[in-house]
Length: 192
Image (cartoon, rainbow, N blue to C red):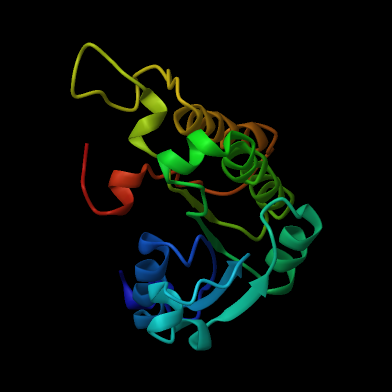
């Protein structure tokens, strides 16, 4: 990460109690970014809490489905970059709790993207962490971003839905963020 780009840059991160989220926050702090984190539940065993990152950022307590909270957060903190990593990622939980999974991965994604759309003169980048599960099973491997989204299981379908939703609010922009939609593997530094 370029320190000059991230220095004092207001960044909003969801999913900070997850593995990727906590390490992203660490890297952003190392680059002197001004990090604001959405935290729904306290997760004491997360890297975010255990390592003390929680005390080095601004924490907004709330849920991704709370559209007014997201709009207020982006406006009040002058957010320029959004990293949307929050999701219900555990396939077993998705099978046992499909409604909660759909809420987290689809209903929780749209309000954030809509808040970014409404603040399009403020938000410059949106990074969305997806999953290879969105593609489901394909005869030809490896698949790429042009492959059809054909997930069949609860988790897969929820991630496919979020993948499709990411473009919905952005299509209504007359001019807006130079969006950077990143697939999970790109977020981790791999290339297609």
